[in-house]
Length: 85
Image: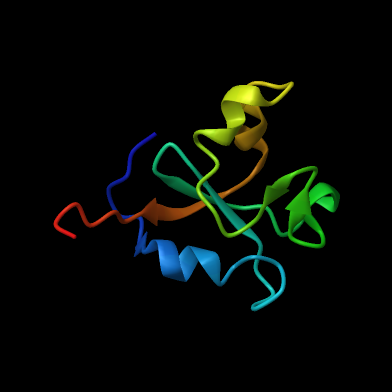
């Protein structure tokens, strides 16, 4: 997947898309941000013990499914990480 042309969002911008603060429900995985708003599994901003508005890269290692689940959702941006902090 190509990151070129996708908007960048910070972790704080991602955190607002948690299913409670704004109507969008987003999660990040391996640097990409996915819109999971239409998923019945994320309706309240939580999917099992995972919260929306966060980077789930590390958490998915313990999931009972592969990362192919993200192919169902649109990529809406990339997660900007400032390494200078």
